[in-house]
Image (cartoon, rainbow, N blue to C red; front, side, top):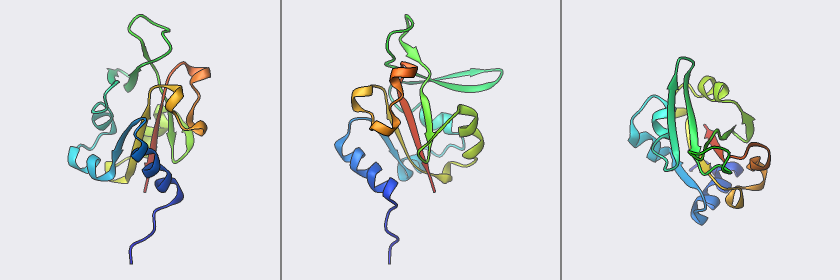
Length: 130
C-alpha cells in the first residue's frame, strides 16, 4: 500500500492546486537533473542567482521597492522552520532529498505561517525535504 502523504505535503498540494505561488514537485526537480539547489531555484520566474566569493545567494523580484532593481533577499523555510541560506546549503546536500519547493513573492498570497514580508520587505522560499 502507498504511504499517505504527510500533513505538510498534503497542504503543499492544496496550495499548489490553488496556484498562488510557484511550485516545484520532486518529479519536476528530478527532471532538472542538477545536484545544486541554486540551479533549481533559478528556474522559478522572479528568482535570480548571485554568485560571489561566499557562495551563491538568491534574489527575488517583487520586493517592496527598497531598491531601484526591485530585488530583495527572500526568507527561507526548511520543513516549516525559518532558515538561513547557509542552513539551506548545509541541510540539503542532495536534490533527491527535496519533496517540494514553494516560492511566494507577495505577502497577499503567502501562507500565514510563512509570511515575514512586513519585516523583510520580501517573499518566501519554502523547501520540503524527505
